[in-house]
Length: 127
Image (cartoon, rainbow, N blue to C red; front, side, top):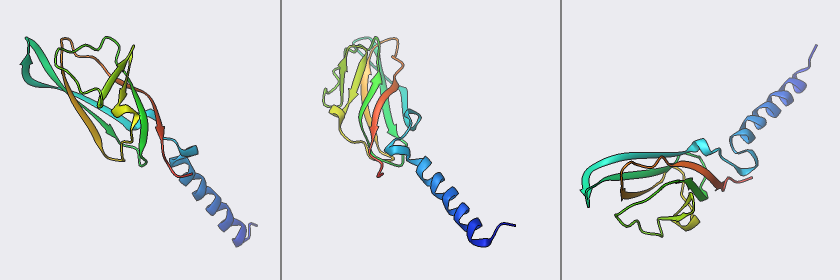
């Protein structure tokens, strides 16, 4: 028969393992970065304009967010402090911090739109 103190200790250990799982080693998965692209309805130089919103859905701040952006081109300038292209990758806000629940937005004009996916980030979960 299991005594009460052993059962309580086992429950506490189990609960602590779930808490650590949420921020394992101070990280969030790339699935917590959502990227939405929507046509604005405007045309710039004959090209459709696209509004992009990158959202941090992690419970922790994230930085050094890199998006895959192979083939990204635009005739509408994008502020390089918001998005800077480096080969097939794009760095968001110069690698700065995006707080939990916050987003970064930008627009570009090109056809077809580029499918952007999160490729890398550093989460700042307390350890």
